Image 1 (cartoon, rainbow, N blue to C red):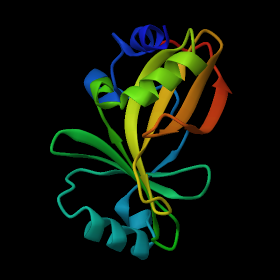
Image 2 (image 1 turned 45 degrees about the vertical axis):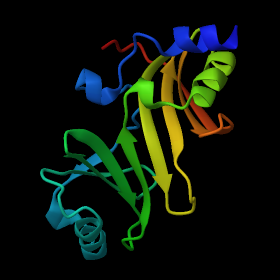
Image 3 (image 1 turned 90 degrees about the vertical axis):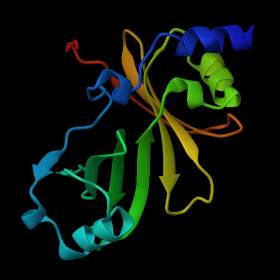
Length: 165
């Protein structure tokens, strides 16, 4: 039954990259030009992502810097602290690339939610990939991070605003 629920949870919903739009679960950020970035942030970014083309820089509410860009047609978001330390990279993936264990856990723990985005999450303090899902229902938007074996590692929720897509 859990497999059926997880299939219903993830079927028919698109990633941000597939929809070509930003998900509602994104927090508000301030846009920046490269001239407004600390030099170490820009240097580390250019070293880590030399093939990145057009980049949209944001100052997030946690005072870290986020670069949003595409590599080989895939949406990427990389986060850096003000000293230039790379913190994490999110990569949009199709839901079909989620491990079955992640689908099963999401289906069991988030019944009635729709998947708005699916991403891999690589952090500077972890040796393995995690999977981030943005889910929503009538009341809230949830960001949930899972290990490849389906364990729920982190969850945050925001009340849903009256905005519609």
